Length: 540
Image (cartoon, rainbow, N blue to C red):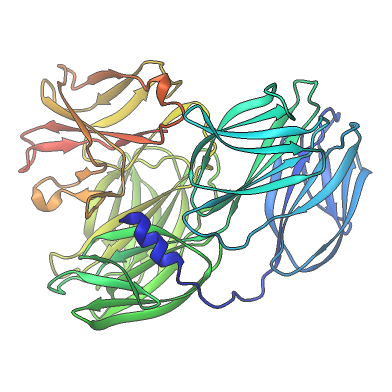
């Protein structure tokens, strides 16, 4: 069903997008230089970087640019490049077939895809003979790009999924590089650059990820409609859902979309939005400050976060007066977003740690929501949306999440996110390999208590139910269902309220494993529901 909805949405192409700057990404593929190099455009230094690094995407006005690569202030490579509005170009300093450094520009194909699909571009920019590019899945070759020589490229559409990529000497089974695992996401392009000297350890492949589509998530924040509503895009029905449910992200091609919210053949709300490639948009049906239904949209910042940080966006879309968003660290104030009014938002990076989040009536200490425990993880966007009517039971805060990590996996890593109402969850060690045992560790739980360990594959929904699911109405304030459950294990905490359970991800799963989530619930007499819950543990 989800694939069908994506296909419907992406078939609804709109009008052309407005005039844009050009987009440029610069890569360093020349090994052995004694120090980092500077990249200069029309006499202005843009940045410095070293072998194997890339910078961008940079947004540059259309025009002609004199590009230079300077080593210790002296130009060593030059290139004149003319950029047109809307161009997407990769510029790479690399070795030619004889080992001499050159500076080259490759236009990227950013035309719309026949979704669901992805696009792979392989560029031979190494001191190496011709190679065959081999794509494999589950140990079987699914595609080969033959006889790629230095300075040339090959482009191929591929289905989304996990691939093992190898470079073989042309016409042989001799592997020159790889295999390396690459996750190919729907609606993205991937440019692979072979760089370095094939006879040396510096020979490697650089990967550039290019968004070719947009993502749209829709949240239902209008209470009291008496039943589900249907969301349409350009007149085609996408899905039906009810209050406090969300759908998406749907992957759509760039264009203009007219979104309608329809119930019993009556259009309740409508709006038009133009989305560009790379956009991540949240559309919310909600109440304005006076309690009237409206349809709003927001573009999310989905750039990668700095090391040791996540990102939080708070949106006030409830029939409620202004609020202050208060974040505390072990009871001490950490940050406050003051006077957030209906229809507005605030965005901020947030350090990693254990925090509590609450909403206060603006300028006061009167709490209208929370506090709830919150543990952000690096490179994740947390979108908090206040919906409903503050004077009714419908008022609440929905949490939508985006993983901002580039999809090029290595070893298995773990991160903790979501909500907790007491006990905490972690993995020891935090990073491990396929086939290597690790422990799921819960601390701060009730002692000698029955625990339920859930393993799931989603933190966005359980069937039609959006996650995280707030358990406060059921008698467990601050507790949430953070992930679905496709496997369940019973266990018991020890006298210190600790639980340890051993697991491993088999090596046979290396090409098929995507992402999984653990959450633990522990029985307790501390609330009416009789359970406290941990955050979720992501293994990826």
